[in-house]
Amino acid sequence: MKITSVNIKVNDKDDTRMKGIASILIDDCFAIHDIRIIEGDKGLFTAMPSRKTATGGYRDIAHPITTECRKMFDDEIISAYKKEIGE
Image (cartoon, rainbow, N blue to C red; front, side, top):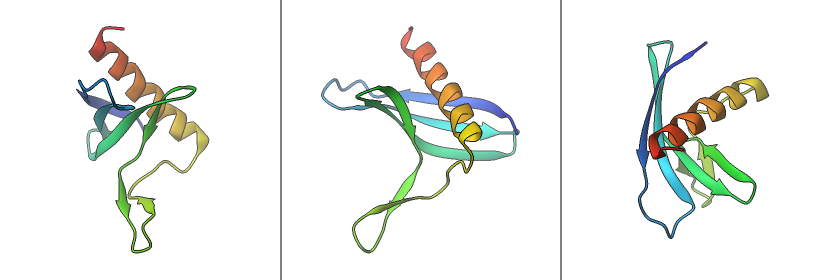
């Protein structure tokens, strides 16, 4: 599996921890939209698209299962975000 495209929309508001939204294309055949880029206490991380549950919590709609896959998503998306903002 390979991430073949990353598209970033930068959030220009300074008063929020959400720094942007990413869409990715996997193997040129599967897209995931609305991946949030968040500024956490330990740096940037990604949050997968989620839906509010009946109990008021949130559940990811799509997400990586393995640590290696999560790291690949984070590395590609955060790298594309930093490139987009000129870092």
